[in-house]
Image (cartoon, rainbow, N blue to C red; front, side, top):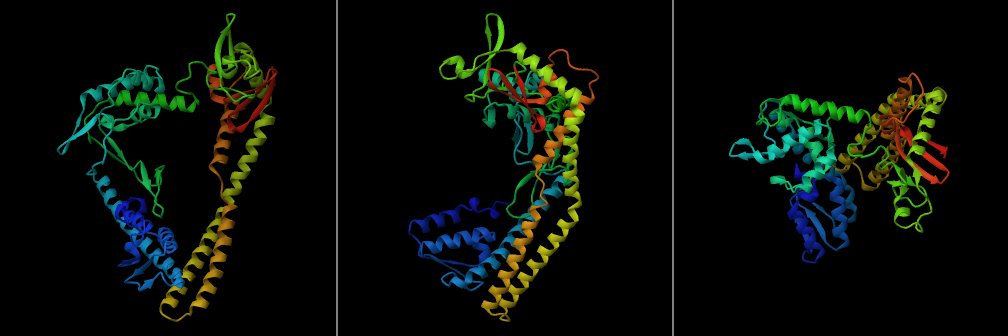
Length: 448
């Protein structure tokens, strides 16, 4: 599918570079579909070439860019080229899908720990041992980032992949079902329309589970234990690598630095990193950890007693916004139909002009009017667009309500899990005030 992307057409890019260097005066090409794969790239390159004093002649369409009035025709023909390119891409995807369905799909790349030997997939034993160690450490409670740091510290061979060990690398290994010998195909899909984008398959298309696609490195039992642990930590909002509950959570409101843990006269405190290096750079002094814990307990208990009057109305407002989105869907469909109708009229006008039934002045007048109508309708569509952030905020507010509804009494001592679950960060505004940023975008200022 690289033929649909201009940046993958090496020879075309070389030609454009030669044009910029003054090596080419005029370009002759068989057709627009050979010159460009979509309207956007077609016009971009034509305009750049014109600015360089270079014209293009399209043989099949008999179009010469030396004539400025041909730009509208290039738009139309570029659209046809885009459709042709999209058709080729869809045929290739259909072929891949069929091979996934019948279990004959051969993935282009293999996970860490595997290699190809002729037609067979075999394990790389030293890499397979590292994979087993990663799973063992994780289900024994060691975090992903800690595992990655240890592997880098020990200079563990990164093998054929050559990657740096990091948290995401460890997560990819832990969540890859191929280590159990089976493969799930079509976890991601490519959009049908240009520009083609790869998206995670969240039920839009069928997925295919194929057994015995490669040698087993991890047993089903160990793999499922790892998935269960990942799920629990994710649902609790836990970070993988924090040594202490407050690690990475406290920020200085004066200079923006992070706070670090420090013992002062046998008392555990949290101090601004910049102040700790040079007190003259930041005036905020250290705050005892127990005091921060106590303030958090007080905030939790205020919310526990008042969440029905604070959080419930907010939840209702967000749900009302979501309801408006659903009621507006019928209107959205109507707008899409209108846009499609006007676009079809544009295509009809183009065909009439091509056959000589419509003069250019009339054609431009009518297409300009139709374009204005389409733009107005597209602006209307934006009013019904709901951002993912709003959905996430509602989910987090509901999590917060659920957190307090599940409790039957106030908090009496600091709870690590509660703090991890609901606090995103703490801003130390000054020596007398903290600002707690909770999930759902909520902020509460508390006196020290």
